[in-house]
Length: 171
Image (tube, rainbow, N blue to C red; front, side, top):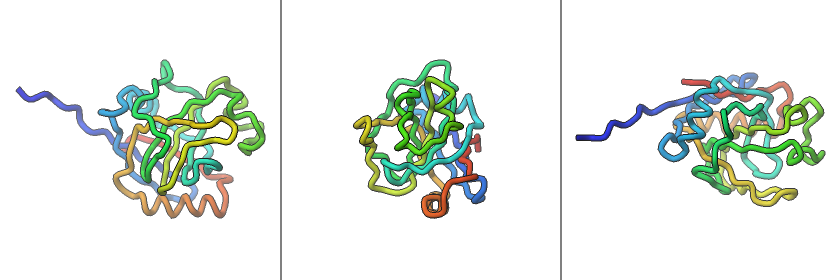
């Protein structure tokens, strides 16, 4: 008898102000705990930031939403284009001015913050001058719309992220 497989799940990742989105498949087979936590909490979103250290990454900082923080499943320090990654940071890890957050950023109100990220181009390395290696959980992979999203991310890098939001929702 064949083993039943769960149906594939998809989400939409969007930059609202720029009017662009892409579709990602959840990697339930590789990061089941993280996928379940994100799926159950959708929709999620917030102010978007462009990574300073990792290179080709945009992300939103969110309050914790899982019953317990997921373990480091399906980890990477070299995300590829289309990877969706999950990170957890403490307030002190993001407290230095080098991160560029003002006092209204989510990490100032909480002891823990979740970073949901999209990597849109290659040659990323998750190393931070303050903390060293920062492995992330790869929980999703973009399957449609990455070139358009990458163009919008480049515009975000060049023109600025102010007033832009990054959202994750069920497709």
